[in-house]
Length: 348
Image (cartoon, one colour):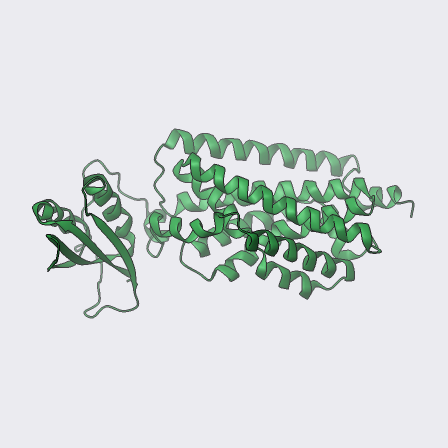
């Protein structure tokens, strides 16, 4: 059973309240006196209960001077912390019991605070973020131009769009408007950098628009919708379990960076219709990744602060997805989304 070590520093006059809280959420805890009139409590908490403990600590002690709590991952615990129906910790009063699916998927999920910390650094608009976004688009664009799939995949490893994309899904799930705006701004600027990099390539390099790696980014089919949904769900699932950022980033970036680079390349080469098709593919992928991300966070039991807000945001993303899929179906039905149309546009 995955476990966390939570260390808490609190003034001595609040320890009775703290011990009551720890008894509800932790399996074992011990006390240590530290300088400055503070008491240090170290407790072992099963990973699935970490969320509850941190929420309770924040509600009770957030405004108490000197209060601090931090969480550490434990690789092993002896004796091990096992959970059976008989030993399961009781739910706090007023909290609905988790469903069987939520209980299963939340067993090894990081707490919301841990996910916040993992995302926080990637939402900063730093020179390295802009440079990495630009270089990933350049590498992806050159790989698509020469038809080298391995190069395109390599570009996904360095693409920095994971943090802001997951940040948007997380913000929608928990109803954090400030986080959502930061993530959207960072993602928008990164996407513009990718398109600009592709535009420069299309402007100065000779482009064969019929190379498969480029051509495929102008086609939008139901398989692309399924792929983007799978990428979003798999990416969020892996991210919320502390998987390697590079590995998770590939899952997300594969749905976003190649269409953006292709959009810039086609616009730079003067092929507006093909560029519009690639941009449409990016829009479909972005919406799919967010819908799948929010649904996956909810499935793992991430607690929304306001179900009405979270439901509304999910409904908006879902409506956009239905609208885009309807447009895609119409384009295919009328031949506007087929490669034959682009071929005719190019005069081939």
